[in-house]
Length: 255
Length: 269
Ligand SMILES: Nc1ncnc2c1ncn2[C@@H]1O[C@H](COP(=O)(O)OP(=O)(O)OP(=O)(O)O)[C@@H](O)[C@H]1O
Ligand SMILES: [Mg+2]
Image 1 (cartoon, rainbow over the protein chains, first blue to last red):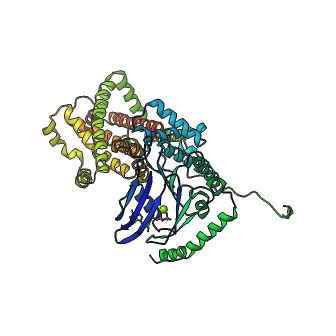
Image 2 (cartoon, rainbow over the protein chains, first blue to last red):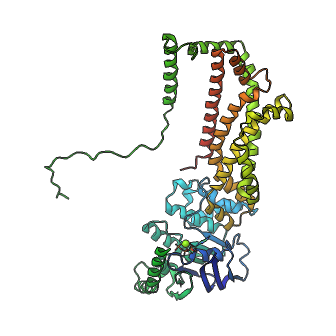
Image 3 (cartoon, rainbow over the protein chains, first blue to last red):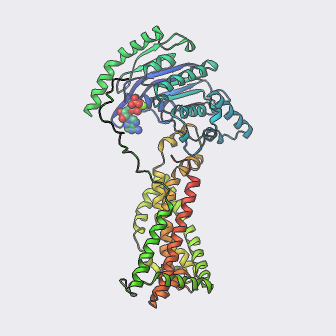
């Protein structure tokens, strides 16, 4: 299933947040979205997943999601959004309970996603017992459990320290290489963008418009920390963003 | 690493962390009671507290033992506890239900919050005659009074608790296409539970307060009736026995809620 955004724009009251976004999200690719603070990245993601309605334009699903996809558009949140009163296992079963699956199938899915995110030993652990990185892995396991056609990730690694982030990026890459998934990945971190993105959409400051779409040709699995080509791309992205970021920063001061 | 001049005077860094973290020290509460009662005992025996001000605690205790041995204690206690349980159950369950509705539906919120605010401050005792007319002089009016008294604080605590449920968790539920009912049952209710339980502490204390008022509505037996009778006869020993029983009830209720909290809210950080 592909997604197409056709001249999408959004307002909050009088404030224009997004303007004329045209974008294709092809199956099996990770599209990263970068842009200065407050340019509407999270808003764009909420529009894509149907948590909010765009003021103008429309968002199209092209093709049907695979039949075994329980929740085609699935989010991974920056703040994990785990229920503190449920264990890792319970948090995953939460999203399966409404779908009348036989309980053997539910157990099977939970075991599978916990194994894929290397969490099998922590099935019974509660969020308060888990570190930030493990919480986000639980959230990723929960997202994988519903077999999404498209994963919508809003700064999923931003709340983590840089070592954990590095490890989780490797995890995401290996998840993708084993079974390519489609994803819209919002981030502040240009390094994450060049490591994970097949294409990187650079937004301008508010109202967010697409400034440039950068394609990264190196296969995901071959992108190493410190690869000169990636460094070059990252530098290019930073050059695109620096002025916008500066201006956005000043703008925030004037509010 | 050896650039430190070890010859100059040294001392360990002073500890200044700690505190501000309540710890379980049960015996302190008991000690406060013992010291207080011991002081009154001494004062009434020595004479710097006159018999008119306070009864001698040991006499009160003797009166209590009498009450117990005569079998009257249970005769008073059982109907009172019945009234508490029935009245508070009705009031609290209605209160939680209405509180959740207010928390979930804007229209109900707009309609009911002013009403609840108007009812809350009415001293329920002032409405005693009305309760007699509506529900008669028997048990029903007593249940109704206690239910009415526990209802409003429960409503206020519950909708406050629902308002405080983390919205990002609700968005998460929606993003996984959970049904409305699942979101309410699995996200909103457990998320509101800490607030509801702490509201319950207040509501149940109010229920015990109202017990005496309810038993003013003509009751032959009951702790409230016992206190009222002792009061009208100026029998301080018996008055204090009754009051002490209510206090003990209060402590027990609070212990039970504490246990429920431990059970249900073990997930809290
Ligand atoms: N529900 C809302 N109502 C009104 N204004 C909003 C709402 N949500 C976001 N905004 C505003 O819209 C703008 C874009 O917000 P958004 O969260 O999409 O930005 P962002 O690019 O994700 O920022 P960040 O990089 O800080 O995460 C901001 O100025 C924000 O204040
Ligand atoms: Mg954001």
